[in-house]
Structure formats: structure tokens, C-alpha cells
Amino acid sequence: MSLTTLEKIALGISGLTAFGIGAAILAAPHAFYASYGITLDGNASLLSELRAPAAGLAAFGLLMLMGILRPAMAAVSKAASLTVFLAFPAGRLIGLAIEGLPSTGILAALVLELGVAMLCLVAFKRRVGRSQLAAARSKS
Image (cartoon, rainbow, N blue to C red; front, top):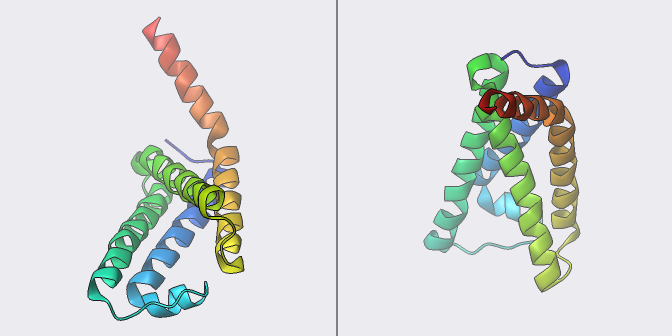
């Protein structure tokens, strides 16, 4: 499947964002979370619990980027991009509803994640709609 320019841009932005955030947490969790106003202690269990999903986020970022380089991976890359950038803001919005307003850094992250999600939805909307229509026609 060849990608449109907008799809490549969306995968590039989502992939670099996910990989960058995941890698930053893996490499320097104290500094990363300090930028949000969160102070971490030296608890090895807590740091492990932060690094584990960070590694997953970095891996998903690489998967998103692979779709640009390998057309056979495009559908998986799009699914990864939409999953990550719809799930993260959904989780933050649930937290906002339950716990109230977080720090401005977290709110900025929410805005960024929503922006990337919107870009992906716009970029992938046509293709997803076409593939669903084609699948429905083949079943008839």
C-alpha cells in the first residue's frame, strides 16, 4: 500500500513523538517527569513501572515510522498510531474528570496528543473508509 504525503507526515510526526517521549523516559525518567512538575524518588519498582510502558511507547513509535519505509507495514503503522494517540488523551481525559486539573505540563501533553490524534484521523480517514467499503463489497 502506497501512502499519501499526508499519511507519511502523520506517521512521521506520530512516530517521532512516540519514540522521542518513550526514549526520553527510558533514558532520564527523573528529568522527564520533573518537566511536568513531578518529583520521582529512587524507588526501583516505581522507575521500572515507568520505564516498561516507555519502552513500549518507543517501540510503537518505531513501528509507526516503519510504515513510511516499508509499505507492507503501513496498515499496522496506522493502527499503532491511532491506538497510541487516541488512548493517551482518553486516559488523560478520564483522569481530568476523576482527579481534576493536572499541571500545565500535563495539559500541554494532552493538547499535543489531541493534535497528533486529529492529524492521524484526518490523514487516515479516507483510506480507512475505502478499505472498509471494499471489505463490505467483497462480502456481498
